[in-house]
Structures are given as C-alpha cells and as structure tokens.
Image (cartoon, rainbow, N blue to C red; front, side):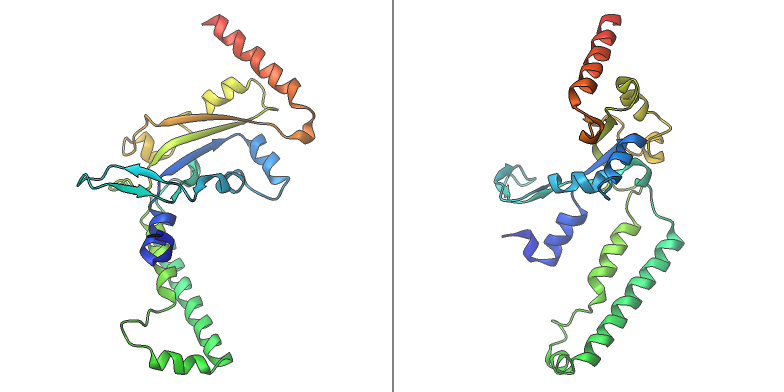
Length: 224
C-alpha cells in the first residue's frame, strides 16, 4: 500500500521521517541565492526516494518492505522548539484562513452546499483539520522528550571560495554553531557527518579550487 494514499501515511512521510542537520558557510548560501533558492531547497529533491524496495526488520520480526522514503533537512539554527505563544497565534491564523476559504468556496459554488449536507458525519472532515494537524506537529517539534526530530546525520557544506576549507569544515561543527538541545545532551552528538565542497561554475573552472583544496588537505596530512 502506498503511504501517500492515506492522510496518516502522508503525515508520516512528511513529518515523521529522519532529520538531517545542515551546516554551511555564508559563501555557500550566497552562491545558492544566485538561483533564488536556499541550499536546503536545492538539496531537497535528492532527499525523496520513490519506487524503492528495501526490506526492514520490525519489532515483531514480520517482513516489511519500504516503497518510499524521505529525509527532512533543517539548518542547525532552525533545530529548536518553536515559541509556544507564537505557535498558538499561528494555529489560530491557520484555522481562520481555512474557514474563510471554505466560506468563499461555498458562496461561489452553491452546489457544494448540497454536497456538504448529504455527506455523513463520519466522512465530514473539516478542511482546516489537516493544516491544523501539520502546524500542531511543528509546534511540538525539536523537544527534549522525543526523538522524531533529532538529527541522525549532519551535512557540512563549504564553498570552494572559502579560505582554508578544511578548517572551515572543522569550524562549522563548533559548539557555538550547534543546536542547544545537542549541546545540552538531549540529542546524540555522535551523528554521521558528510562533507560537501560546493563550487559555483560562474566563479571559473573547478580545477583551480579543487587543486588548492587537495594541496591544503595533503599539507594537513603531512603535519599529522
């Protein structure tokens, strides 16, 4: 069964999937913004896996195969629990906007009124409910008492224009850059790390920058 065919399945795919923390330098974000996109927006299409067939082990040892999989990307600065009062206000706005849209749709298409009246109560789900549910999940995200939103891996991204890129990778995973929940011990600090060197072709050929990077890396290895 395709999980995207049910509301619960879609919520699991969108909200209860592994989180990857993203750390990047300012030059990386500047390069991405040339396309009108953030780094996460550029990487996101590569985080959805469809038409796969991967067996997984369950608690009951019953065979189960994953057909779809998704990763969620968050900047380290966004891995924090939202302000409660701000979240309440946002929930009110979500419900209000959904209600106003329903009213507008009913006024513009009277036939929908008949559809609503003939729909059984068990089938009648308020249009605002999916939006409310999604916002509610976001409201309680990144808490210290659950691990659904705790990152399982980290992607560190440095630009080829950054000086001493190896040191930049080290500096990115600095205690000052990390979420407070990770520094406080609520999240596991021993997560997988992946390193990405980003080059903007508008800055010239990559050979020059890659050569400098490899030269600097070799020099560090000799020092060790």
